[in-house]
Image (cartoon, rainbow, N blue to C red):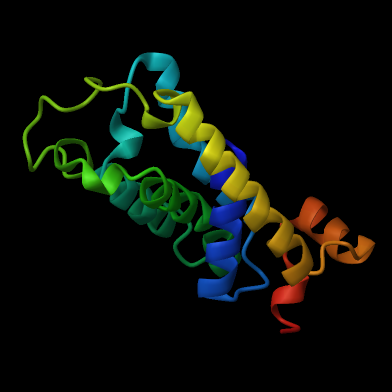
Length: 161
């Protein structure tokens, strides 16, 4: 599932944070990053809350005193946390709360996005609907708005709402 994560992460982050300066390309990257764990046989650290909290703290610490860098890279943990919400990892106590709920849960189950093709296709269809809505809501039919998103990662239409 790619469209599901991209469309819903961008839409929800844009509507919640309303920050025209957030780099949405990094939000998209963060929302897709946990899918890489599927190549390694299951849900590992990127599907845990503690890893995502450390990622958030790392961004804030490494870019301390550089507000623009913090704003840009904050999209990474926001995207990965968005993934955890959208794929339902938060419902799996053993993985989400690892290591606090036990240490044996990681890598046991396959990445849920790849387990059931029919459900995945339904989510992709829902993501497509949300994506079409977002295209209109954020005025992505305007070439200047699209160019700002592709070149700078910005949804300039957020500030105009």
